Length: 52
Image 1 (cartoon, rainbow, N blue to C red):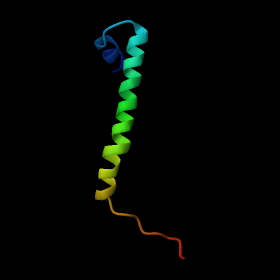
Image 2 (cartoon, rainbow, N blue to C red; image 1 turned 180 degrees about the horizontal axis):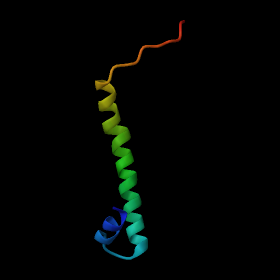
Image 3 (cartoon, rainbow, N blue to C red; image 1 turned 90 degrees about the vertical axis):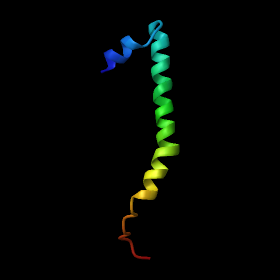
């Protein structure tokens, strides 16, 4: 899978690495700020086992 992405990207190796790192950072950003909050609203909150 990685070799397919590597061959698809244009430019020298350093530019390919930079593009892959930027894509990973963008994916993590989108997950943390957009996807995880939406999933948190859908999933029920587990019951607490600690008494007050």
